Length: 265
Image (cartoon, rainbow, N blue to C red; front, side, top):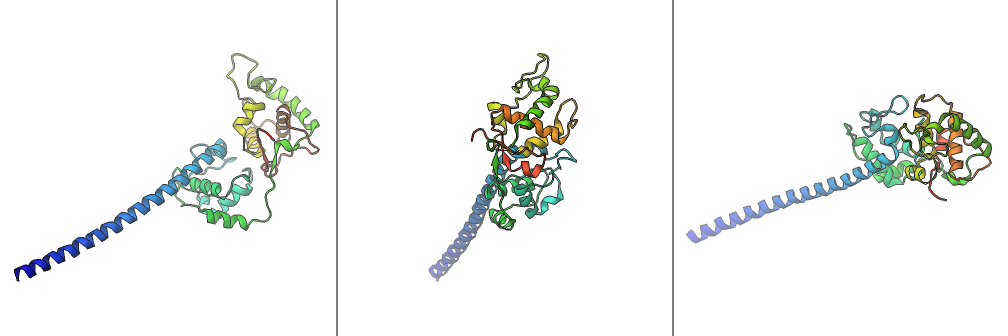
């Protein structure tokens, strides 16, 4: 009887241990799965952060605070709760915000996820499936051009040259090389050729247009009209060797958003 009781006790202990192992295994599996999902989300979040830094931080700032009323704050913005709206705005632009037609579904999902969860935001993940579904519902495709496609006219560039000489040249140099004419001045960034193109590669003319019209000239921002700003940009393109075309650049953000700055054809 003692042996039988001992056997029963051992069997009970074995079953208990087996149950514990099963429970621990389940917990471990859930924990590993949760960590894997967290790592996957973190990877998407980090990718979105990189895209944000390259395309959005110039206007919306690293902190997401923006520069209201021109560039809206993203931190604490309740409009970000609408994922469909964010996806559409990234792809097609909205108001002063240029479109980013060059971003694919994965990149849009990563960017939207970052914006919706960075800083103090907590609006949740945006999946690639959501992006694809939203983009499929948009009417028409987005035609993308390049600065090498002849997007300005010679007359426009000539007008821009006159404006540049009187407004911009003293800081950015007569040859747009970023070297100020006054040696006591702080050096300014170049506005043409290789160094300029490396900084602005992949961005649209809309981003360049909106940035310059809000911040330049440094000593008197917004003192030029939109038409004058776009003429200066046409001159910058001409100095950079981009070919002339038959139509002038228009100071329209949505149109400019479809013209990408590229280092080569």
